[in-house]
Image (tube, rainbow, N blue to C red; front, top):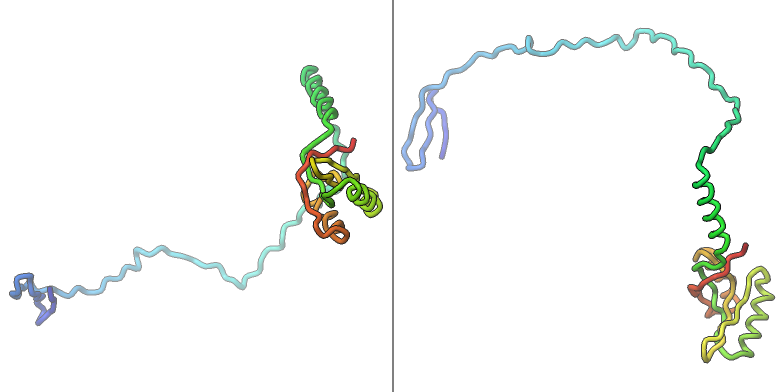
Amino acid sequence: MKLWAALGVLVWVGPLGWAQTAAPYTRYEAVSVDHYRRKVTYDDPYRALPPPAKVPALDTTRRKLQVAYLQSDAIARLAEKLVAQNRSVTTAQGYRIQVFVGDRGGANNAKYQAQTLFPDQVCYVDFERPYFKVRLGDFLTQTEAEEVLRAARTSWQGAFLVPATVNLNR
C-alpha cells in the first residue's frame, strides 16, 4: 500500500491496485499547552545556607552491664548432662600424616625420625597386614594437617594426608 498527499487530498493505492482518495485533510493551528504544565520554582543557589545544627556529644563512658539468666531447673540439669556427655568424647574424625609404609624395622626407624623432627606431634605405628604404617599427629582440620605436611615432605617426599579417627587432647 502506497500513500501520498497531492493537493491536500490523501491518496493511496489499495490492495487491488486502484487509487483511493480520502477527504481533504485540514491543517490545524498550533495550540499552546503551557497552561497544562506544572509550575516549578527553583531556589536561588547563591543564597546563604543556615548554620548547621549542633549535634550533641556522644556518651563514651562505658557502663558495666549485668546479665541475669533465668532458666528452670530442668533446663539446667539438661545442660549439665550435655556437658558431661561432651567431656566423655575422646575421639573425632580428623587427619593424620602417613610418612612410611613397610616392615617393622623400617617403621621403628621412621617413628624415631618423626619423633625427633616433630617432638610436639604424636607418632603412631599401625599394623595392617602385611604392612606397618607410621602416621603422625592428630589434626581436626585439613588445613592444620597440611601445614605440618609441608614440613614433613622435606624428609619424606611420599608423605600424604590420611582421614583417621584422632584422639582429642583434654
